[in-house]
Image (spheres, rainbow, N blue to C red):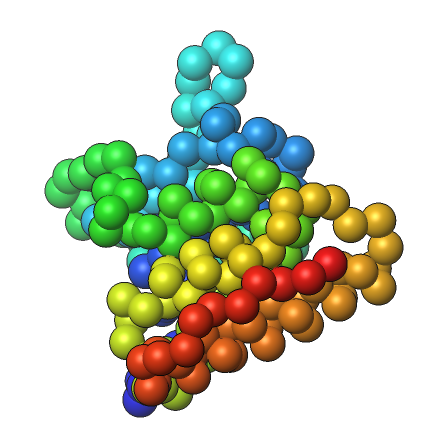
Length: 194
């Protein structure tokens, strides 16, 4: 779609990719990672400490600054991105609606299952988002494609990079088949073999 980019679609997943990344990178179980809807998009992350205090990262409504921070940590480098706290009038927070954000639900399910399900989710997500951006499918078909690929993928853990890459390839092929079916509405979905 003209003017729409991968990062815009990722934001529409309700935080599923971010929740999955936090679980993986920081070894935090999914039940301890909470996604909160914040319409102003000025708080990019919050961490609650054992004493109950919360540290929040505020910045302009632009992910370049949190990414810059992550890439240069523990150093800080100059940036043209500025945020005037006096312009902020209120902050709203609400729990996510898993019906409105089915990709978030799928991300939590994949992280809880681990292994093959996270590989399938990632592969299907990349194929489905690319198909949407190329206008081959509707936006609401993205979670359906991901869910079908995850359902067709047997649960388990893979012990070699060869097996991981093989499953990734197989999941991408299946996702492409489902995209093709969305375009022509037909044929049953096959299962992935390990």
